[in-house]
Length: 133
Picture (cartoon, rainbow, N blue to C red):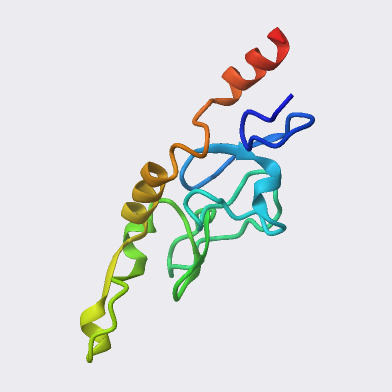
């Protein structure tokens, strides 16, 4: 039997949902720190490390961790965070090779790019499928 979420052989892994991008994946995908393998900044539920948003005046729970400048942010403040995107070229002026995009746009793009590798099965669908086996 292989795990529906990660494809590993053996017992099916415990599922966890990313707090940031809402994709379901294996709890063990956190690679020891609970970070999402799909969007790279989201927090997998079940891992410790929750905290408040790093933006001044915001007291919501953080769902993205390791983001530039503020270290963590909530979903509502995600458009304020800019993620640096490299073009891969090495021109003479490094500023022309860099661009950035808001964290929420980056997360949506990563979900689309990684959709083939990670399941979007809801927990209810997972539980139903598991009990029917």
